[in-house]
Image (cartoon, rainbow over all chains, first blue to last red; front, side, top):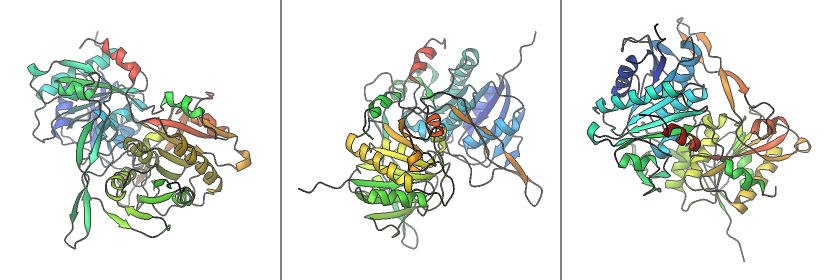
Length: 257
Length: 257
């Protein structure tokens, strides 16, 4: 008896031609039938943006020799919406996003297009995972990541995920023998200390680049994703889109309006 | 003895000239010293996007007769980052975003530029509130909203907010005497059922508009923001940026990797 192959939606935020998505697709082809819908250009830092004030286009491409593949003019979240509502014949068994060139641990989850695509997958009721490698370079080596991606994807296909939850997976830039294991973590309390880089254009008018350094306020806490990554573990943060601070409801209910 | 007036940062996602921000500024001027840093164009649906692949500019404007006011080429989150890191001399006592023309209840919190600005304020450690009126029209009547905004803002200034938490306030489109009160709620489980509106351009090529209808999966649950709004209450959802699904950590820890 032949078991039905899983249907897998692949997207990312670095754009459809990024080496990271190429590696992710290679792994997914060994697991199931792959549909790719990914941005036609880099969309890093787009968070959960959607395109509502302008139009969207998709173009059929033939880069990866998969079941179907499209580039999309929109954001990573747009890609998931178009895939689910226009391209896929049925709800996929898995949605994977990445592999991002660079970390999406801690507070970066909220700015990340990679993770927002995975969160959108979860909103659509699809078991979803965002993968990131702690190496921003275009020449990053994804060989170790591919092994880890396969292990985690197979686990999600086997076990499913709690409703309303996707996974934020970050992979240290290490050799396979250096990696100590996979650690399920919470999102570390950390922040960007912005240092706006002010420059002058040729006519002397100022403009800015957003830049900054990352500050971890959870130093020494062993249950965070940053601790795990610093100690050569792969981090998995189960990530939800219910943003309610439930404990605060009681506190604010005491206010006199 | 003169008490120091609170320093208040105002932003939005509908753009610096929208009637909603004008009403919000009017209220804030009665409470404290106001600094406005808001997008120079509509930024609805931008979620938590930041501008990292292009540059940012700010322009001093004189629309509202406040302490300082700037339009910014970036997203609502960029506005908060630039305000905090470039414009403000000290951390403000309050950051308010809106008043949005249209609802940001339930899952809309994640797509909303208005709410993402408030969330960014919370990330920066500033007591922050996003306000939205359930009326999308440019001619929306903000007179009732202004009373509610003042009540809630004064409460936040007096009581503070739990660390890592901002408020998502939605106001029904009702007369003041119709409004039954203010209700502290959780984010309803709801979703957009997308219906991509497919059209053809003059050369016959297809393009899409994102559209859809909203579906509430929490029907009848009295503790949700949607229930409150449907029953003529103002809803307040305490909203956090820790997206960790803490109960899921235990579940995923049982997996065999």
